[in-house]
Length: 361
Image (cartoon, rainbow, N blue to C red):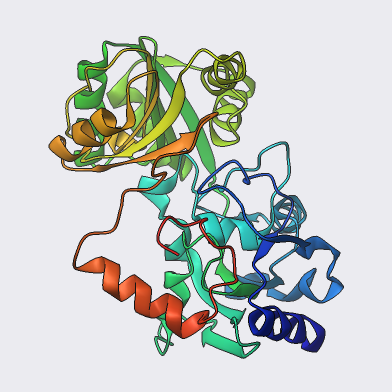
């Protein structure tokens, strides 16, 4: 990694901004990219599996390793990334997974990206190679530092390598469909979670509530009997959850078409308490994560969206839009802002790594 470190040191010395890029599949997300493009997938030192022992339930990989390759390897051993990271256009890297922190439908039931990140190697803005965390959960020295990189949009350094916890694939899965209004669906999601059913995903859109069960065969069969509903055929269920995870389903595809047509709408991603009522806004809404994630496709002005999110006890992110002139992420609080500034000064004092992408650096 010497050459990579040298390039970072040189960029810092010249104060030349750099845009670190894996596959670019999530480039639409976050602040507007700036700086000279650096395609990390072309750096062989950052690609490939470093260590994998299936019985230990963790894998160490280079950050530019394609997610599809890693997931294919894990599937061959009956394992997966439990947080179900999205792959847009079947693209995406391990580094992009960590930098964006985006998780899929299983997130509230199986944990977020940061919950599965055991450690990483980072090259900071001064070209220093730093290692945090380890392969065991009990190795907590620096573990929180690893987690700081999740969702930081690559602004704190170049992620070179990561160790991730993996999980066995579930023995059985079943998806149940119910016809329900939004508020009834929210109540049903929360009730099912409180009753201890083996949920692994939930979603509502356009009058349809879907609950995915996963676990051992006896637990899934018992939950099916108690919950009722219509059992979706396995192929249809797999297609639905894959479409939701990778955002190829009609909700997201229609939203992208509307944005590209210049209709004035944007896609907003709201994190709110699961029990928050349905938000009264014009446009389309899709609910995930047991009610904790609300997707809005709306022409409503950003300030009003953020106000609605705050009133509901959460926050809003401008996920995709033609115009990102305003804030993309919720601005940090007066307490958090100086902490983030100190972190940026520590890891990237020249401010050359992915400037503007995180909204705070």
